Image (tube, rainbow, N blue to C red):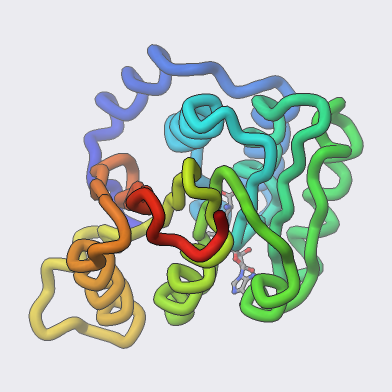
Length: 220
Ligand SMILES: C[S@@+](CC[C@H](N)C(=O)[O-])C[C@H]1O[C@@H](n2cnc3c(N)ncnc32)[C@H](O)[C@@H]1O
């Protein structure tokens, strides 16, 4: 993933946003030290944004699609009330093992329920409504995740979709590969979807913030 925001600007923004907890910092550092795909972590600034969104919607129930080593899941769990929950989907047992170790070190870890397996199957099993849904898994399924998320989101909830700028490759015509095309298609679909209002933010690799219009989603 290419940096779209200047690293000194990113650092300045981080320094002036909610701080990451000590447990999250250790989890991030271990992930960066030991995991080949550590760049998949949202990082401290986007984590602060996720926490802020959870606070703004007064979230109690969060659904995450794509947990990796649990950095974003734990960040969100930290701002939920004691009876709050994060249901998070992950297919790969290796990062799940790391996540479980760190969830056990945090007072907020007990709010997190890991659903191991393909996220599409989990999404068909879980029951909504969720106050916040964060989509951050395999890009080829993004359109299906979006459609299912719309069925599961609370009327007052928000869907967040990560990596929607795809290192800037969304500008390329024709798209260089299937994943880029899916992200382009998703961004167009959301922008034209009368059931939602949306804003594409240039945080990190791009975050799409999607809010159902009143009366438009299926969960009342
Ligand atoms: C970008 S990472 C998630 C990073 C995480 N949200 C964070 O910031 O800490 C995407 C994760 O989705 C997982 N994943 C990919 N395809 C999946 C699928 N079909 N079902 C569930 N998880 C999947 C990958 O194994 C990977 O760990």
